Length: 137
Ligand SMILES: [Zn+2]
Ligand SMILES: [Zn+2]
Image (cartoon, rainbow, N blue to C red; front, top):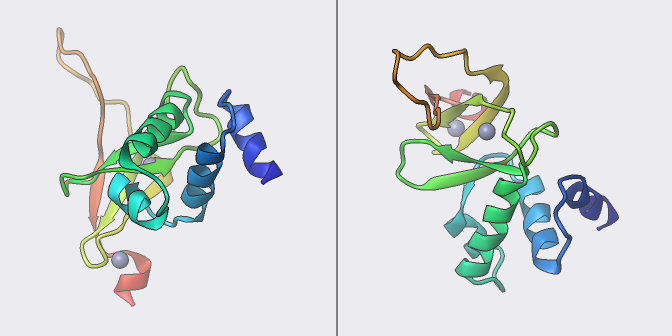
């Protein structure tokens, strides 16, 4: 548990039992998860507490949202250099049309997008659809 506490403290998040459980769960995932996934896996939690925990993580740069076109918001852990002041890991996400899993591609950054004058960017989502390595076999 010590290692988990350190990870929370590095992001200025006070470690609580609930937060440690959620972080532990997220670290074990290989793809982005929805609140419902978390709720089902972490049985003793209610949705409101879970939502608040994830929101705190998001505000402190520990997790980021993933919109993969399925209509369900998913969450994934950020890269270590994300902070409360902003997520620095604007990367591409990959949605596998076979296993329906969404993966972060942290090494594939979203290129600078030029907007016309007067347009203001609120968020960027770049999603690549296809088959993941496991499904392609
Ligand atoms: Zn797949
Ligand atoms: Zn991601």
